[in-house]
Amino acid sequence: MTSTLIGSNPTAPAPRPPAHPELPPLSPAACATVAATLAAAPQRWLRFAATDAREGRWYERILREDRFEAWILGWAPGHALDFHDHGVSAGAFRVLRGALLERHTTRDSTDTPGQRVHLTGATTAFGPDHVHSVTAAGTAPTLSIHVYSPPLLTMTHYDVAAGSAPLATSTEVC
Ligand SMILES: [Fe+2]
Image (tube, rainbow, N blue to C red; front, top):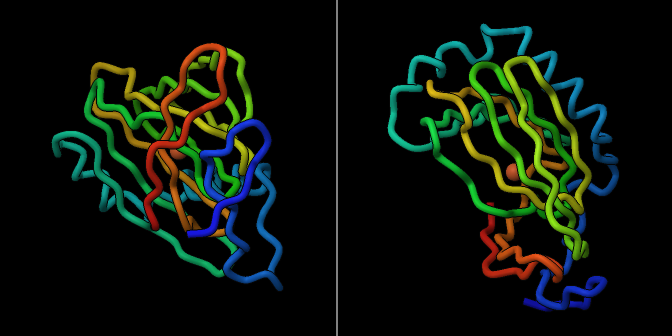
């Protein structure tokens, strides 16, 4: 894999071009609109909600278009996904039930990550430089919808320490 320097973090992988360059990706705000629209259409995801008794974290893709895709995720209480990006994708997520604790930064930031809790009904959007960790913060299983545009190509995982930019540790192809 060819790599290039990105800001102050030479370990981050080179962004890949969109899968369909003729179709511009959705903005983060538009991803949030898709997430809210899907949340209001339980016929699109309710059949998966019954699986939330599974251990850990589970996910199912519920929509795939050229410009974006949507997943439903189930989280057992306390289950977490450590710091990661979403490749070249922007995105949004909406909490259908439960609560998600998000710690967030960007690929080149040396600041201490911010922290926020997203309760049931909350929607948040992010650009392609967003790096975050997500933890199910409630006492019951959490259910959430996640939208990515363009559809996820890669996901890079990071170690995050105060005073230095996120350090890429591995990249998975989605
Ligand atoms: Fe994420």
